Length: 292
Image 1 (cartoon, rainbow, N blue to C red):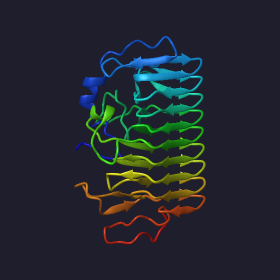
Image 2: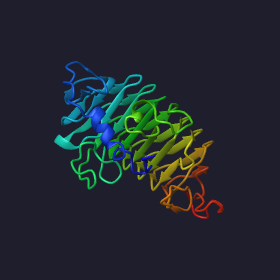
Image 3: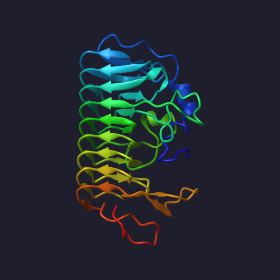
């Protein structure tokens, strides 16, 4: 499987993604609904005065797109805002809502999530920093992957995922990747909450969160989930009922779970539940002695 979890699988699926998704785009939606298909995605570009809906597949790849209201991904929709050419980026003044079975890819950056249109993917330089003024709310999505983004409100992901397996489904089949969610290299003004998510993998890394971070009753087929790495949490970090949590990364080149290198979090409030002591560095070590 071509997937390195902390480096998102765009590079692994670039050839397939280019063939299937980067065909000439449909014209920008004249109305407040962006519609498209995998073969002919719609395009968000320019300024939209009110709320916007995404139906089908929609790209942000033709310059900046600004939504002065809120943005909703309807059931099963796909939003791809991971392009860096033409100063492409997405800015939403209000909230983004991701509905059942929908998938959102927001932001790209060298090193952790290469932009799809970077002309030098082996030595990338492009980035796209997306902005959400309000909340990012995900209700039973397939997967949501966020990089290099600023969210003024809170991030909440409840339910959804591809099920307790690592089998590609939905848009993830295009780049032969398991279904997963991630928030990395971003800023969240409020809290970050993930609850009742059943999928392959989840990672939250290098995120500055103004409020609390909570992971509750999440179950993943990959034993390496949930990786909670090098975050700064302004309030409490709480983890209860999850299949596993880690504040470390595997160091084996073979993909083995152990040994692991610590990447602890900075927490201004309390560490609670499963996220109190550092995860064990070897399969025979106890948790700790340092903090998670």
